Image 1: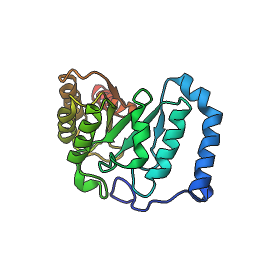
Image 2 (image 1 turned 90 degrees about the vertical axis):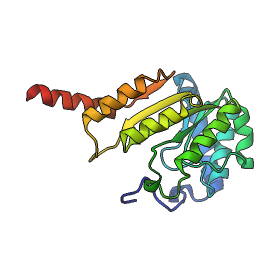
Image 3 (image 1 turned 45 degrees about the horizontal axis):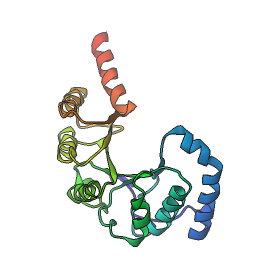
Image 4 (image 1 turned 180 degrees about the vertical axis):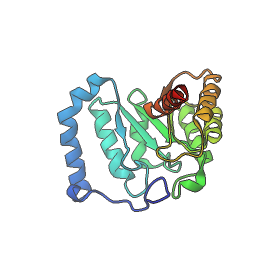
Length: 214
């Protein structure tokens, strides 16, 4: 995974054995936490571990999504793929527009995301979902280049219902002031709903505190 945003081998964790066992484990876990998830007001997220729309695992992932929705559990999906909208495994879940929202990770940096669909194709997929009445969201994280991230937001302002924005961890090729300018640019768009991740806020605060001490 060095120097890339993700790995290149799709596989289940060893303890899940096979897809049938993985599905059984999921159903049992959902039964255990169903009430807690619903009462929290936050949807069940698919997923930070992998991409739920990869061809190798899309049927298992969306079988789980279907089951969760059937249990009245709201779900949110996050993907870097744009080639799955017509897959038979996803059609039922996408019909339940009150219980699902679909997000796309948008960095604007295709060369750093091998195996993912180009950002432009992800935006087209978002447009198709939005036009079909499915709630959409964008993960603008990590910010690799503030201007490219701002461009992704500008291109999706009319088709995205919600943004979640966070910075790159570790060494960055931008300054806190560039992030301040980026925030100003986003704010000028008057978006409906934006969540600023703590990592971004702390990055700016740290710089301000250092300037104050100096």
